[in-house]
Structure formats: structure tokens, C-alpha cells
Amino acid sequence: MTLVADAFTGSLLAVEGIRDAMVVLNGPTGCKFYHSHISDCQYPRASSFDPLGYLEEFYFGQPRVPCTYLEGDDYVAGSTEKLQRVLPAIASKSNDMIVVVNSPGASLIGDDLKRFIENAGLAERCMAIENAGYSSPVCKGFEDTVIEILRWMKLSKPDSEQLPEKVNLLGISLYQSNWDSSVDELKKLLSYMNIEVGAVLCAGASTEEIRNSTSSACNLVVFPEYGLKIAQWYEKNFGIPYMLSPAGAPVGYGATETWLRSAASMTSADSSLALKMLRKERKKHYHKISRFHSLTGLPKGATFAINGDSSVVLPLTKWLYGYLGMVPAGVKTMPGGNPEAEAMIVDFLEEKGFGDSWGSFNECMPVDVVLADGHSVKMMREKRLCRTGVEIALPSSGYLNFLPRTYVGINGSLFLLEEIFNGLRVMP
Image (tube, rainbow, N blue to C red):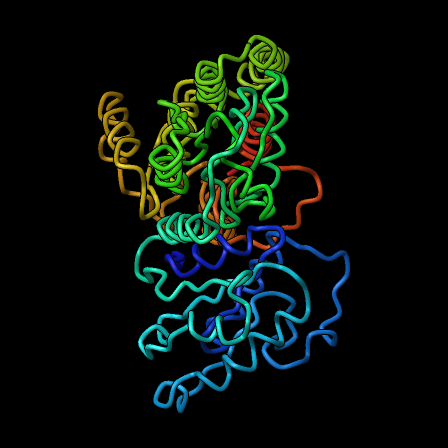
């Protein structure tokens, strides 16, 4: 079975998603290697990598997430000596923001991380996350850490009025599959509406962009599991309203149109060009879908199983059923899902007569198409339990993407269609 990431992973990747920030992990090497690997894969910051360049203490041959490599005695005597060495050493390598995050075991020691930071003279550029809510869902760790960072930065209201054509994107994380292509797609769609994106919080934004995020007139929530609490924090502290689409994330033609209309309504922008582009692509490729169906009868009646974030599963399930005529054999959401989205999924499945499909995603169940994390997709393919699979979540199968790939927006719809239709061409 696929291992599901927890809040600890969400917390680390929230920091690693800031362009000029880095995590220092106060914990053992066992907590370091996976997170350093996934951070470097999801958001590489160097065009070349020489492992011999990171052989010094705390790095262990990896460029990201240096750690204090706590051992047995450290849990008894404390991590004082290693923390006193690691902070100045890491700080000397760059001027980036530093966030010290306790591993689950280190949080039990009780070391005063803030005191170490102050003694190292780094209070202006270094903060601590002493407890990341370890057994909670990954999205909770992400949101809580982002809010802690915003508080530490002591954001303030801008001197001038907030710019009506400027927005922030919330709810995008390095833990999401092809997050960077999703950001590019959303920025392109919003540019058709003359809307400027100020900051994509903790998903490629710099510390300066985050500090300037209060100058935006609105926050657009993309995936509420990762961004709704952050949007509510901005509204409470700075009066910045937020947009939450009733259709879920912009996945599939219908949900993308709803998301764009909602963004336009919130910002008083003109969505006509963006919607025109969406309908143009939809019409352009309808003939391919119709021709494929006339020759094979597919995709109508093909079964699918899906497991992902609730805000993705909701629009994707509706789109696959309503637009392509596919049959939901198993529908499941990841921990920490949005309750309203999950309730809408259940209502939809029951209304269409597929109530038994809710929660029944099974990696041993044969289906035509599986949409899930890369590990599940790869395993089901190898066992010949599906004709094709589409990665919509981590952990990744390891497939290297060079072309932009996203399941969000117009290009996301085309990507999903391409994967599904070409996969269904393969004989079972």
C-alpha cells in the first residue's frame, strides 16, 4: 500500500517552497534523506549537482535539508552542541532565510530552538518550528507552517491602496504533482483577464514576494486543503477577501470555467477572453473524441478508479462521468480532505447510482483507468490491473517530465484526455 505523507513532510516542503529559504532539520538522518530528495526533485535550484560538493557535516551528499543527525545520546543529553555548530555553518553559505524544524523525536527533547537562534545572532533571518503536528495530514502541516512563517515575518498593511488587478495564489504545494506547471497554467489563464499574480505562497515565491503579498486585493484559493486556512488568516488580519470556487480545483473544462468566472467576479475582471480560449480548445478536440468513440465505443463505459485530494477528486469525477461517460468504480480522497468537497462527491455518486464506489479505491481492483499517486499507478500497471494510469499525486513513479504537464486548467484537460484516450487504445 502507498505510504501517505504526514504533517511533518508538509511542514518541511512549505519552507522548501520559498525560493530563498531553507530548512535545517533538527533530527536523525533517517528523517532527512527522503525529504531532501523530494525537495530537490520537485524544486531543483541548481542546473548541475556534484555530490562531492556536499560532503561537509550536516549535508550527507545532498544539497537540500541539512540536518543535525541526532543519535541515541542526543536524545538524553540534548542537541545543544550540534545546534551550536549547524546554525553558523548553514548561515555562512548564503543569505537565505533559515527555518529550523524539529523531527518528531527531537520535539520530545525540549531544546529551546529560539534561544539557539538568538545566541547565533540569526534572529533576523532564522525561525523555528518546534512541533509540526506530525500525525496530522500533510496539508495541515503545510498550512500551519505557512501561517507560522507569515506571523514570524510580521506582515503589515501596505502604505498605498491594494492593487485591484493583483492577486495571490494559495493552496499550491511542492507536494503536489507537477505543481510548477500548474502555476504556469493558472498565471497564463489569469493573464487573459489582465490579472497579475503577486505571490504563489510557498510554491516558488520569494520572501520579498511574500512580504508584499498584503498589497494584493484578493487571494485565489486553488486547492482548499492547502490554502483555505491561509486565506482566512489573511482575511482576518488584513481584510483581504478570498475566492473559493464551488466546483473545486480548476480540473476539467467545467470546473476550470467555474474557477475563472469566480476569479473574475471577485476581482471585477473580464473573463471573456479566458473563457473563449477554453471553449476554443474544447471545440477543437471534440472531433477527436467523437471519432474515437465512433470507432471504439470508448471512453463511454470505461471504468476508472481515483484517489487524490478532495478538491481534485470532486471535479475530476464529475468530468470523467459527465463529459466522457466513464464509470466510477472506486473513488477515494486523501486524508485532510475538504469536508464540503467530500460531501459533494458522496452526493454526486449516490445521485448517479454509484454510492458503493465511495471509499472503495483498491490497488488490487482491475479498472480501465486509474488516477492516483505515481506509486499506485506504477504498481497497478505492472500487475496489469489497468489499461492506463495518470499520476495526480505524489509519491512519484520517477517518470521525468520535460514537457509541461499539469491536470489544471485548459492544458490540464488536454493532458488528461491524451493520457486516457491513448491508454484506452491498448488492448486489455
